[in-house]
Length: 387
Length: 91
Image (cartoon, rainbow over the protein chains, first blue to last red):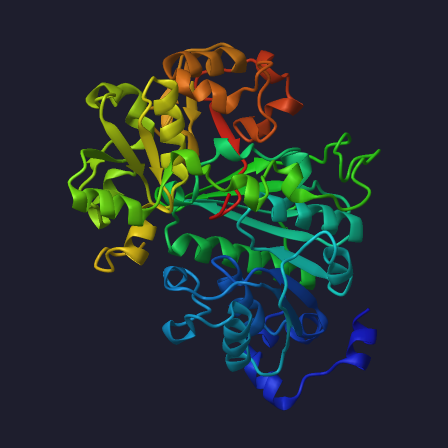
């Protein structure tokens, strides 16, 4: 194999200098560096995980680096998505990432895929690469990446994060388990903490993304012990790493002996995610920020209830009475059901749940503030910071 | 025995990262945990009382599905980990 590699690829003198610290190490050497140069890795997402992942793969000399992303850089990304800078805000993540990668290593080819990964394009895209690194942030794409990797026979270098905890593994190799062996089904949408309740420690995707980069490079070199059949758990707060055994499930719907997933499916439906229209809040119980402002100015007797967390209240508030959503059942006695109540959170998701709960508890005059305090900051009072 | 509670579920377990329960089997340990923190139950178990498909339970480093599930014997010093699937920022 090495003989063939040397015939089709070689390193220029500049590259030899660039990769000197690899070349003098027997575990990589010229043979390993040429493998890296010929390798084609597809990164799904140029966000928190994708940033460190792509930066290190580019620096290491992975010859072809594909990136799939359709998003635009915003200010809240910069706390962790280190491939983008402040002047990139508003640009496509793909363009910003490609510029950074080309600056770090102009000898590699960065291939940009300005699209949302979908069941329609995943198989064709994956076939052009050797390894897929999953840096996505949602369940439908996780299952899509896994199934497409199983169907195309490409290893899935997996990383995932929540607040200060992360998981990493290598799925869908011939001998190893896939993501569905571990989790056959996703959680229903209501049971996982939502955007604003989540949050993530900025360095955590750095840690986990670099573990993914390490595993990718080990797979290319064919050396070391990859995380196949092992789930690495990272707790950044305790700074503890643990490892769990994963087994290939013979009954796995994707990679088992009698797979039922033989083509890509509708992953939004699989994950129980409603379409945009269906998810739109019902108007009968909603109040717009303009309406709230107008009625408060008029002196109407409205009780504003804020169901965010105390640390969010500290960032900004509009003077509402604070009862976090999870505390609402045991603190509901603080509310007067004869008064008209307007409930808000950051974006409107948690307050919708609170409105449901209050209505079931006998409150009849309850409204959800559509768009939450973010809409208030956008459309009523620009002095209120957005977060 | 010690049960490690993952970050997303700590809000239903008195914000604790680990809970100590007396138990002879995995089933007893989980039962002890959900008796002490009833809010956890719906996050761990589906309507039919089965462990949810996106929640895995490990005794030390081994998945209880590949041991004897709830009937797996446990001893002092063992650690039970609840590992839910996490996706990243969005849901």
